[in-house]
Amino acid sequence: MSKVTDLVAELARPVVEAQGCELWDVEYVREVGEWFLRVYIDKEGGVSIDDCEAVSRALDPLLDEADPIEQSYNFEVSSAGVERALKRPSDFQRFLGSYIAVKLYSAVDGQKEYLGYLRGYDVGAVTLETKAGETKTFSPAQTASVRLRLE
Image (tube, rainbow, N blue to C red; front, side):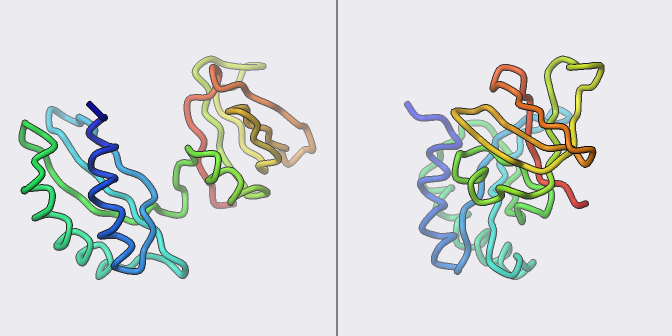
């Protein structure tokens, strides 16, 4: 059986695209004792509250019908945001040269977070260049998350 997020993404993609948006990500997480299903969308020029509402209204009945989640949960549709997580190889390719934050599982040279410009992505390894001109490459095993950052 597929993961909940994969099933929801399959349902959501055509709905999101019909609203003129792109499906960025789906997450299903437990926070403060409650489950949240979040669908993140993106659009050239930015996502409005109206875009989120339209996707939510169209997707909600499909989720009710498909019933991919047994327990109760909170459903949210949101913009991917300017400081969005980069996860897929296509995300890294699209934002090559952008300013990013790389969070690590364990400190490297005394730091657990590095800021810099995305210079490369190869089979999960992320390369960034700091403002000081230092180049660092982190393996997938080292990298907890990579997000765009406003400079």
